[in-house]
Length: 179
Ligand SMILES: [Zn+2]
Image 1: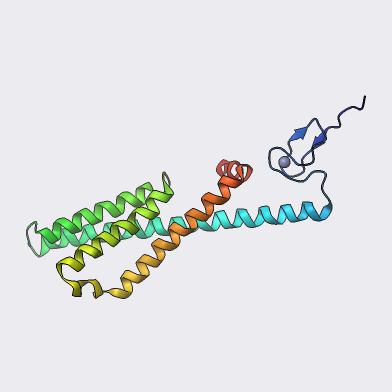
Image 2 (image 1 turned 90 degrees about the vertical axis):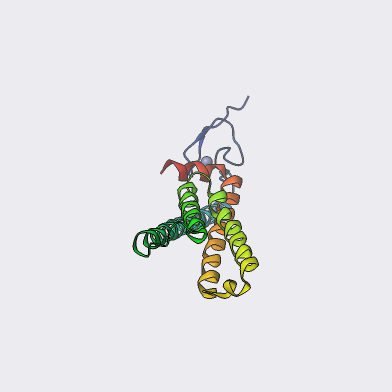
């Protein structure tokens, strides 16, 4: 009877007892051709870069949400303490918005899809309500609004992409989470 050869995967260094075609941990084509192996490695580098890139975008979205949250709360403090407006409806809305933005920033690492998707829905509702109150308010600071939407949308989209890659590639998910 032929003895099973010991094979060490050159990608993840797992030892296999049987002569398998692909590594069972990282799916590296151990018995594949040079071309297949380098193609695999190139794809792995690409996926790693893509995940890292999306983590950076998530960080940007987190900082933006946090900054806007702080800005809103500073505006509230300014109105209450300097302008002495009293706690009006507008001040109440701004307090709630500030708190929610900071909450979403806080949730970014725990639940990225919720933290990047939630603010988009919330902001849409906010603008919808503005429209009901006074439709001219929708166009106030329209470029800021569009820019804000684009950054949030970008954050949400890259979170989706990263999630998809990590779901398909468990080995990559474990190597990245070790760091
Ligand atoms: Zn492997």
